[in-house]
Amino acid sequence: MGKKPICKAELATLFRERMDEHPECPATVSVEIREVRTSEGPGWSAVTSTADSLAYFKCARIVGALTLELRRKYELSDD
Figure 1 (cartoon, rainbow, N blue to C red):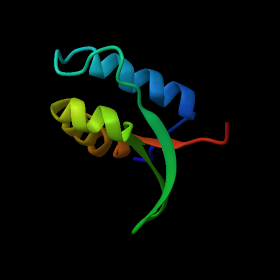
Figure 2 (figure 1 turned 45 degrees about the horizontal axis):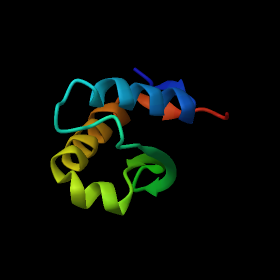
Figure 3 (figure 1 turned 120 degrees about the vertical axis):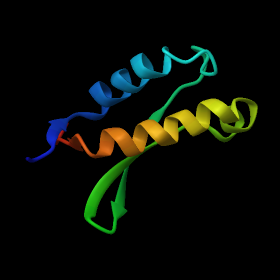
């Protein structure tokens, strides 16, 4: 089964919705979706700012876990 295409804005919204389920992730923490190269070819990664990663390290770990989960389901579409 292939991955579902999704644009960066939709993916960022999905991340925010999932982050809102965790009290460790305040609404002030934002996520940026970046295109990256992976061992499997083009891909994407979700990152928080350095300041947010340091101030809310548990939230940064949640974002990392969500990235791994959602990469299995979604690929970036051409915005």
